[in-house]
Amino acid sequence: MDNTKKIFRAIDADAMLTSSADLRAYLTGFQSTFGFVYTDAQESVFFTDPRYAEAAKAALKSEFIGVEIAKTEETVFDYIKSRKVKRLAVPFERIALPTSERLRRSGFKLIDSMPAFTSAMSIKNADEILLIQKACSIAEQSYQELLGLLRAGMSENEVAGLLEYRMRCNGAENRSFETIVAFGKNSSVPHHAPCNDRLYHNMPVLFDFGCKYHGYCSDMTRTIWFGDDVDPDFRSAYEAVYGAHEYAIGNIRAGMTGQQADSFARDYLKDRGLDKFFTHSLGHGIGINIHESPTLGPSGKTILQENMVFSIEPGVYFEGRFGIRIEDSVRMLDGKVLSFMKAGKSLILL
Ligand SMILES: [Mn+2]
Image 1 (tube, rainbow, N blue to C red):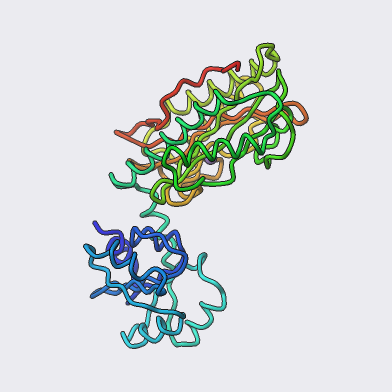
Image 2: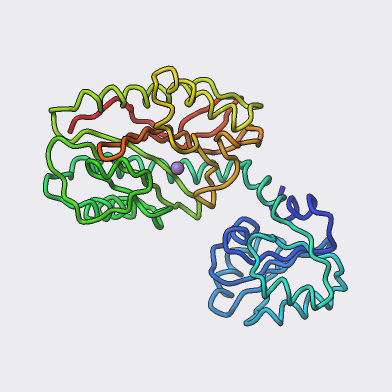
């Protein structure tokens, strides 16, 4: 079913107004930095400014959504008033406070559309799965190419730039989030920002990266050892994280909550005395946004369902020494977890 109709039917309102870039892209399939989608039971109209009008008309012409020019919010609000709308659905967490105040002053009763978006967007259709699969294969191929280009003396920033460049060369439109490249002890900070530290022999390297393809994200993390004299503590921790990753992928089933899914990896690490070093959640939904529903973590209440796409990323972090994380983007297929990543994950000594 068309995404606009799907969301509107799930909401009890006279009309809905959607203006944040991610939700707008979900409704229209068209990426833009400014615009509003107005939907009621009779029609859907995409208001955008003159910069996007031509591209939007071409992109949307086979859809039922009409395109109108609007340079300001006022044009859109006047249009909604002309439709005699009383109960207007807007995504509360994505709408600016001044905008919601203005809508309330205009006499609309506001209803939250965000829960309907969160739930619908977590289940991917066949087209979305293909785009995510492509984003994953570009990321994975680019990473393989990067490994052949790594040299002692390179900085983290240089390596991050090189990886993003390879992803663009391979067809990505952008990175899906700030690329993380962490050398040595920097890898113990889960969200380390790449700096000018240099790569030397016999240190771990953690890469956490992904790209966007037609608006859909991939997310992947690998940790390698640069050199051939591997620290035995690093190797044994690596085997534990790798085991937890595989154990989670092998045991998570549709119908479980995000909390139950997370517990496979957490319990696996606990049996090895490492759970206190696993300081974040097992995973998160992936789609138009790099972090969306469901959450796979100790507080994850969402039930995992067929065609959800999410990450599986157990990790352990030893302050001042090293960190290890292994992450795949995966989907729920036939009740089980299927990874989008193809390459093996056993420890690489480069
Ligand atoms: Mn992730």
